[in-house]
Length: 457
Image 1 (cartoon, rainbow, N blue to C red):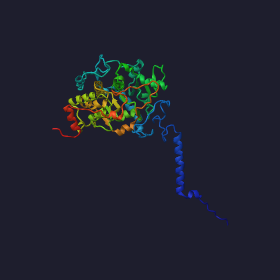
Image 2 (cartoon, rainbow, N blue to C red):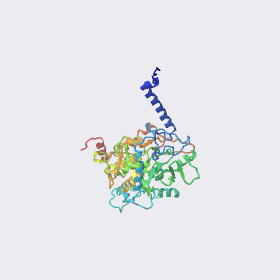
Image 3 (cartoon, rainbow, N blue to C red):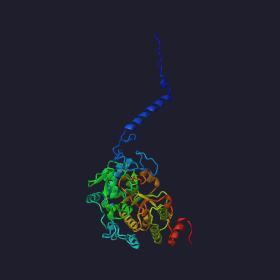
């Protein structure tokens, strides 16, 4: 009789732990290989609506130096807004933009000619426009001098009839940064405009980012608009205020806008941001809370202390003017407004009556006093009528949708910067710390007592 031979299981397969370990090893190696060859560097993302991962523009290594102002690292695969909603959002934004009745009634503007771009109206004259009681009122809103750009740029601006993303670099103060996380349809439906003065353009010429003889410039997604700033304000910061707050007039046919300071890089698709922070909140405007300050006077004191604006007498006059005319510190009585101080580096707007009126009124205050927009923000917001529907989102949201860089573009060649703070451009920290407000008006004293939680009889 033959022997029955038992088939022995190889020793390798007798250990379950060893099998699991080997399986884990090969899975890990496969995923690492997939990620290394994937064009998106994101695991298993192949939907046609995924954000574009490839760079929108390749900069020469010589173009500037930058450091993160905050060290938080954001992976390009992550987003604070669900990108799976992208298709729905594109359709809804498109429908809103084609429904002109959603943006009525339209604000009427004062026309004419003046020595300054905004007319530089007296204080009480500016305040008289805060109560927009009927649609026949014509509100001063800049453009009392021509905005000096080329005809081709003006035509392109007027042709933008949906969503526009706007930024500006004056005085060669920042670097052009490309947004990331864009959907493919966003490049079709959204305009990107960057306003610059001649000093900034000279820097781009030196780095060969744009040709000198071209009538139109483009760097990545940004169309570059040259502003002949010598025909506007002497202070570059005030020239930057024009596209920041009068975007609805520069782009008269646009329906939504995002202003982004050039020190920021946008990390989330603008259509998703408009939908999540403005449309879904039924807001006229969305803006981040300030990370540190709640009261206007806190920001004013910091502005004086650190010489963000060196005309201390002018700051004092501004605060005393606002105190006399009803500026109050923030309390719960101001709800649903959750703070008086925004971080205005990122502003999202629906171009309707509320946000357009607010933007015009605040621009007039900036021309009347100084371009530090956080100082007049709460005064205009609280005093205007009709009330602004404002979404003041948390700082954590801001940190997810934008990366902030320092203003440290390396100056090269003959490109020179001038001070934008109303004073000398070189100050030591010790010198900057000596500025302070001296508020003698009784109304401001009352403000301070309420701000500090003291009773006043």
